[in-house]
Length: 288
Image 1 (tube, rainbow, N blue to C red):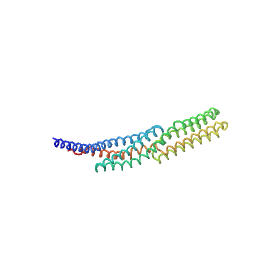
Image 2 (cartoon, rainbow, N blue to C red; image 1 turned 45 degrees about the vertical axis):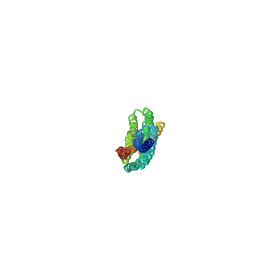
Image 3 (cartoon, helix red, strand yellow; image 1 turned 180 degrees about the vertical axis):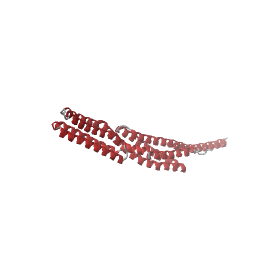
Image 4 (cartoon, one colour; image 1 turned 120 degrees about the vertical axis):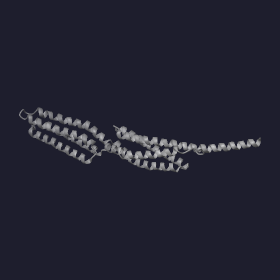
């Protein structure tokens, strides 16, 4: 009886030991599968947050989404390191290769994404647009109003001439305003240069009209000086707008997101799905 009990006890210990060993390997495989799924989730979060940073309407939103993307990218690296230790420990060479492919592609992705996020948070195109709709519009209107007293004070004999010169000056300023939106949206440097030449021509036309007004109606010198000052402020703002528009941070970040980044994102996801598929085919140790 004692011998039989001893044999059963030894057998029980052997079964328990086998179960623990199998359980340990099972836990590692289960954890590897969980981490691979989490890796894809974190990578998707990083990519989506970066895209939102590019599309954001304000500096605050761009910065917040960029920070969210960077935090998710850090989590991707941490999870990848954990997963790498497990698949290496289990001797899973295919899974280690797929993870290595992902890490290489993710490094390229991060290099590009840092460039995109740096551009996105600048928001130069949005700032140029706000400048056009706000201060620039205000100074254009101030310029128009500065010409009204000149027109009203013209003698009946000169009224048509003074009115035509004032209208020419206002029309030239409005033409510059109309060219600002295409400039802000334009991605091509040569096209922007052409728009700037048209703006310069309109500015010359406005200045020429003011010079003729000064000669035609010297009694309105005070109001003409005010108009010249208003035009100068308008042109200074227009120069700031051109500088912001030339930087083209929003246009460039969007182009990179829709082009190179999209391809790198797809290649990273391809590696992660291959990794998940490989882990899914793994059987539990000791099973058939």
